[in-house]
Image 1 (cartoon, rainbow, N blue to C red):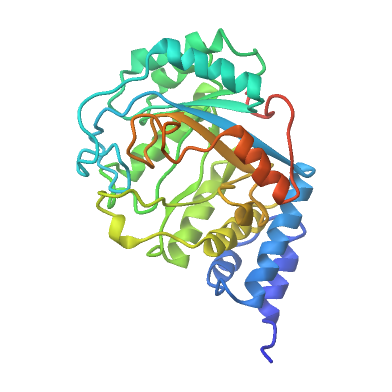
Image 2 (cartoon, rainbow, N blue to C red):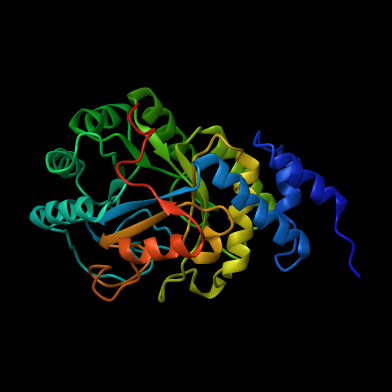
Length: 336
């Protein structure tokens, strides 16, 4: 009979105290085989600590994709990238549709609203859209953007228009699988902090080729940014993209990573992403995304029309299946 690895057990027990783990300890957990008994214990511990951190409460954040115009940043995993030739031409969601989607999401009980753009989207249009959406959602509803790198003046302009924060990340193999220098990403983090914008981030998009060392480096970087939400998200294979042949993580491997991130970051992080399956939600992920409009992880014009974007009703069922209750009302901690 296989003996449980005492070293891994000790690291997990330390993680359960809620004060985080060292880089070396985190690396040891990322190296654990996904189908091992140690991995099962890691997943249990990730869920246990997340339940404590969030008082058993999960959240559903709602994303509206504003455009699918070909993007010059050439992220090889993204359907918007010009290098992938998956999409053609220019498409932008009309403002009246964006406002209607925002209202619907409020009625359905979203806890946060985010607007996604490619790097080709006009910044002035984004500022205008932020201001318009802010007028139709409650004052205490967090409003975030997911857009290109931003200088300090742009961060301040978005803040003044009504944005509370942004999703922003240094992606796996940034500058190799993308045309974006890591330094640009890090500068945007700094600009956001100075402008008073909160941060949602993630170790993503993770594929089978990413090593435990890469995951550990990305995890430590995410933790250092003091985000309101973070975690590990797997890469979704998009047909026709340059990374299609690398494949995709299994749900169990992704769940292990979600749990490791929770143990590494400790109890202070309330929202651990990404709950994309019941398995990840049962391993410590308590943040999921509903999506409408354009979506970099599929190829249809609007993800809700035959694409892969989930809706709030589906995500509530997923969280219920993994013993989470979903927050009622706006997410907290985003208003800096």
